[in-house]
Length: 143
Image (cartoon, rainbow, N blue to C red):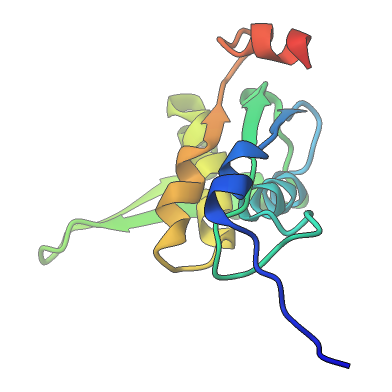
């Protein structure tokens, strides 16, 4: 018996992309981010192949109501460096949530995806909103 591996075609995968609408209120940050990463990568699909980009679109609302567990609200920091000497900056979690809460979830999902050429394409299919109002309500009602 001859066994053959079938790979999904790129045009078929792009036409079969679905939209997933998630509400982030009262959900734990890490669990929500891992669920989003699976949907963006397409690992929930039967036709998943790691070398093809077969993920779906994800729209997340109410990001300012996301929860974290333990003492992370006081202990968690976001680090960035400008590349120059003395250019290191750390921002506490609370201040980052006040300034831009979408950045918190965006970084969590970004760091959960594989570090390869497809990560940027997958992140473009992620839409994050602080409140209830989105421009995607019409497509949500159509589904």
